[in-house]
Length: 151
Image (cartoon, rainbow, N blue to C red):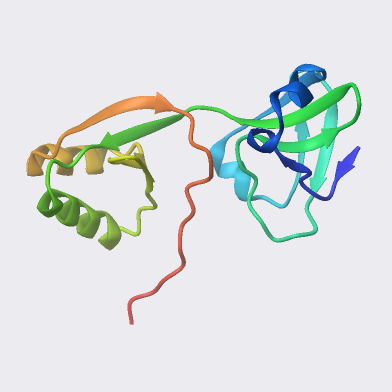
């Protein structure tokens, strides 16, 4: 099977539409969500080729296939993250500036900044006394590096 389009996201489906189908999952690392062409295997051993026509990233919950009996959904493997919880706008600005200088991609959930684990960033957070914790957590989308050059 070759998937060329994402049908929908499971969060957009009615609960009744989901429970009447057998669910298979494709577990992916967040870094692979940006790949438009790849070969994946479901948790039931079914191989699926992904060749997206539209230039878009995959996301957790994307439905790759759906018929009357089955649904195949993307799920994301947990990442090793630093979950940063600045206490003030000044702390947020300070760490955002530092991470921006390193071109480190970040995601935001509620009042938390998420970055992939890096021991140098952890040392920086300790040095700046900015609250954080290290944890395994699923992200909904890939950490995307934005191309930029100084000069």
